[in-house]
Image (cartoon, rainbow, N blue to C red):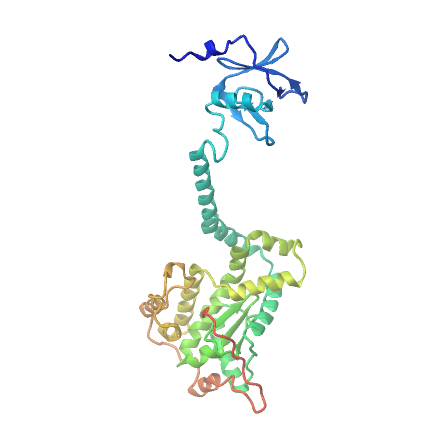
Length: 385
């Protein structure tokens, strides 16, 4: 027949063993004896210093070989340290909730819950917090800083793609005429700079500070000026919306940009890092859709069709729907862009942007002169149009 605990261990008899008590009100170490009956009593000689209910006792962090305890109903800093292994084992046996606040031992549901909440918070920051911060901070970036960043990015582009600016005189005149017409229809001033790069990659990009580059590889695939005009209008849309700076804040974090602006990160290496980030990264899908909308509107203002631009993009990339998870792609699917530009297309109502002779000159803008080095042909990369 089982005997109750009081019969086996009289309440009046303290249990000998090494224990140290800190009352939480002073730093004094007290050598104490413990009584294990209906509750844990802590005595110093004949004086009872504290009585802890077993259900309120919790394990606290302590060194190896020492059982360190706290109590929910005691002062927050009160601690009991037990060095006697046998006494410690008897205490742990009586304190059923001793590990409820110890990660990995008790309170597993709470730990898992807080972990899931933390993960959800991180996802929320990435999906909503960073884009919101980018939208708020982008207008605050000084134009001078953006131009300086663009200058560094310009050098990065020419180095990375092993390309030069094409300088065929007739081709340059045709290109300047085309860009001027698009720029004026887009409502941008003469600070916008542009050029054609001697790279076989079918691409075009906009750099911060007002510079747009068309790659000869894309020009070679174009069949008429309207196709190229829409691409240039798209890149001018990125300039007008300052998408490069917005993307830099989003990708690198607001703290990095603030460091650049206020001097916590200084020197050319930081600018090179930022410019390389912009050159090698892609715009968000929303930014691409907005740039497409801008391009369609510009083509309408010029009285030229928007559909040819979609046809050029489809000619470059082909159908993309079966190439993976489109929701993860930064650009809208090319077939979707072509479908949209077809839906919003209008019959030509304005004059051609270039004459047939000017179009031929533009197409040959990168033709090498006698004695010139062969134009750079960097390894093809994904188009960022």
